[in-house]
Image (spheres, rainbow, N blue to C red):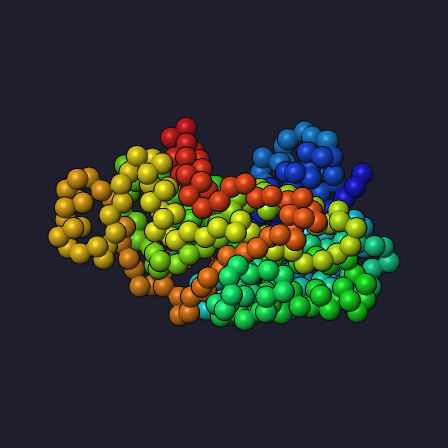
Length: 341
Ligand code: G4F
């Protein structure tokens, strides 16, 4: 039975990846952290599903190098997907040290373990568009220079470059997936897309009156997470390791994303900042007010992040099909259905 280890299996991407591998009969090993609250809701359904694959969860932590080494030596996975670590960009300004340890140093520790293993292993590293920060050119491709503008982006740039160094210096099969934002109904609730889709669903169901966000003019290249997970797998099946941009090539603003999500549930949005008279008029016609809260703004905003995934398309045959407003509509539908079922 082919086996894979997923670091970050309880997250959005990890849960979709586990699902795909189990459906194809893989033995899937997942590293889970001990936490006072159970945090496995995204993979709970996989533990009871009889399927061709087999799921084994191991207590561990990327910071606990010895336990990680033991798991790798014992289970000898053929593929490792490194998706773990603090992934909230805004929060990385508040907890920069943890962010850098989990995304930077922990990746170095993992690469060092892999160097010493006596069996071949292929590593997918979840790099990020945040390594580009506020690039001078758009769209970005694999040759665009890293210039991160937040602690999270710095940590990811460090880890991405180390992946390249270990690939070239020691011949390790390390792929960096430089992924742009990818969303789904399993997205964490403090990312803007899920805040919007959940907010729309709660308002539609009469459980909430309004939502508050930060920078509505921020633009992102939003894709659909299960499609990105498929690309991760393709990378590790390729004849040689390389870096790949994963992006839709289309950007839309937070304002457009929110408008699409609310419209999908039959709700009209009015934006604070449209002027008091206009806002009052829109409220009178039943529009929902989207409030702006300064606390959701970041000290520095990444800009013009839109990716060119030509390499992934031509070499891996990967074509992202779902983007922007379509993602917003699908998330709003899913959240409303879950709330009312
Ligand atoms: O949803 P976000 O927090 O995602 P962000 O910062 O783009 O990062 C995500 O995508 C990256 C690329 O794949 C990943 F590397 C990273 O780990 C994470 O998955 O924010 C998106 C945009 C930002 O410009 C932010 O300023 O939305 C803006 N925004 C506006 N109001 C908000 C809010 N973001 C959040 N989280 N909450 C708000 O209320």
